[in-house]
Image (cartoon, rainbow, N blue to C red; front, side, top):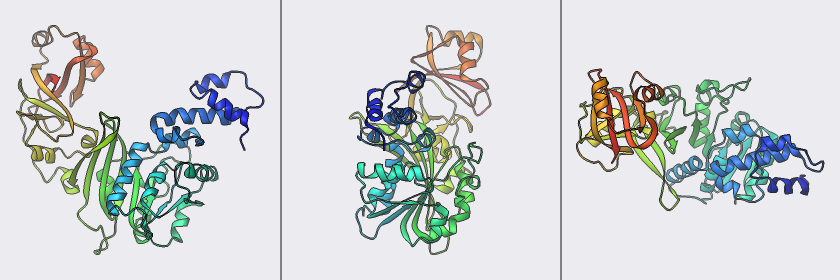
Length: 412
């Protein structure tokens, strides 16, 4: 039980730097280790978990659990996926969820709202205690908390609507792992049991993992979700479902998802959907074109870049690629529905010094990006003698004939 002095200290110093607080004199009546943990947790939650941070009484876990937990944005996306799969049947008495790797419970707290019965399973006693304390505060008073090993619990589990698994991506020495077989539990080895125990199996994996390999390593994959927040890939999600043929229930689909901040402060998800087969790029061909002044230049958002469905994008929007490995697209007209940044090309310059001086005349700063180019941004910025920022954008890239060019652009 935390004493009142400690709780008051946490509230009083909630916005202070925990590292500086740790060096100051410590009031004898205050549990400083606990206070510093809660202050650091609350500060992290303000950005990552604003709903949790604004809920009075929520207790935060140690730093590692805060670092590993999902953001509210990605958790809310999982809620939308579950709601779609279940046909909007939240509250149905037959619908049940089991989270085999409960952790801090962020994903669980969003998924649980789609089910009548929700069971949180976690082997760490401390995290179970936090879940028991926090879930009622977050509007989930009937959550079932089970302190147990997820794999052992799975073996005795009756059939449920959905199983959620977020395998631990740390080895015994605390180092990060990415391969499915190196995570705990090994969901590839458990795939047969998982799909026997649930209608749907939802698996969260590292965004560093190649989704092609993830699909190849797993069985029963029916959906792949590449999820980005503010144009940075955060999660790779697999949905497993056993079909009548004993494998996946249908042609697997690939969802590329990016969160978009709305003017009213809300968030929507920009989603592109492809057949998984189109993501390998081998079944489709792309057209290529050289950029010229006046053309529109399109840079796909992060989830599309991660997915790599570039040939499919070319066909879907009728655009041409700058080159096979540059992942920039060209169009003579402005496009609707293309998820990414759009620019208008003002000039195209080679790396010839005389041509560069003419093209960059009057420009003292610019936003520089490199795509399939031999120099880094820092190296190119030094060579061009340009500061960062401003309204000018420069894309340094390689054309299909292997020539290097700079595309001087403005936002469209």
